[in-house]
Length: 95
Image 1 (tube, rainbow, N blue to C red):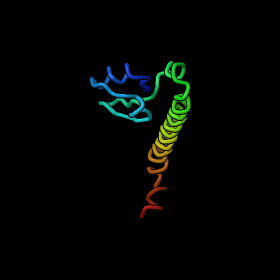
Image 2 (cartoon, rainbow, N blue to C red):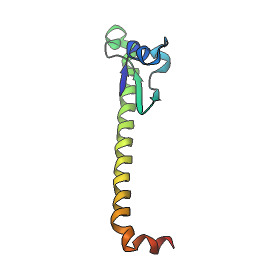
Image 3 (cartoon, rainbow, N blue to C red):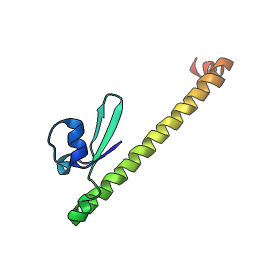
Image 4 (cartoon, one colour):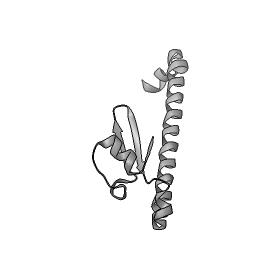
């Protein structure tokens, strides 16, 4: 989940933080993971912040692709355990 701007971050953290200090940071609370970034309206008021905003979303895309890759590897591993392990295929290579 992406936290866009100070208001969202402060609501979650119960403390005052500056987005310029913590943007592009990933935090975990419980079972949820949060990606902190600028609010899109920030670049309207501060055009110099556009570069940081775009870099944040590039990082978010990389994180999303990593999660998808790990999920795919998990499916492959499950397939191996369910269909190949019972036939002794893995036993041959691991013994």
